[in-house]
Length: 116
Length: 106
Image 1 (spheres, rainbow over the protein chains, first blue to last red):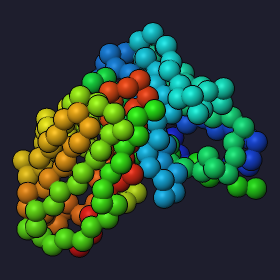
Image 2 (image 1 turned 90 degrees about the vertical axis):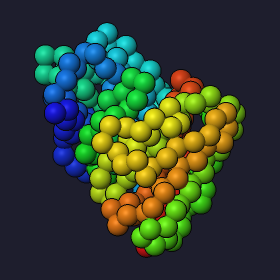
Image 3 (image 1 turned 180 degrees about the horizontal axis):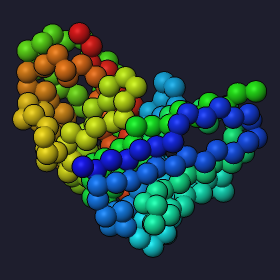
């Protein structure tokens, strides 16, 4: 069965960076894109961008351009999201979601807390 | 970016009720509208895509409709497990966006 398993919760200080992993199983990893979405407390879901798991091509939301990097390791069937220069407003649950025409499987979420 | 206005932000209902949630897009998104259900502490779960196509395994009481800018999610007979938050999402543009969510409470 398809599963996306994310890395555990992180606590970071302002200015630090965080890298979240998303381990995929149960399907051909390179046949799909992987989207990254975050949900800050009390806020709506927010798309951060996506990575083509086959080519490694990326598309970032303008809001995060320059601060976020998506990578993938095809041998490990894992996608990664790194966010730098963290600030308190980056406190959120971060999700990966498998997507082409539909976003049918999501990771369980990774809580990133940014606090001094 | 395409803005999505979802209403109501919350509603109270009883088991067996018919419930309708609305999403309005700031421009036409054709039929590129999906609906998700989210329970506390869990990831969103895809219910409907392409406005009205039920995701595999989702009960038929979930009904999606609309086109262009106005879309609805109807739960024909609310069940205890349906109490959750519902989100709509447009994937028409290269920058997908979500509605603000509707919390369905007892």
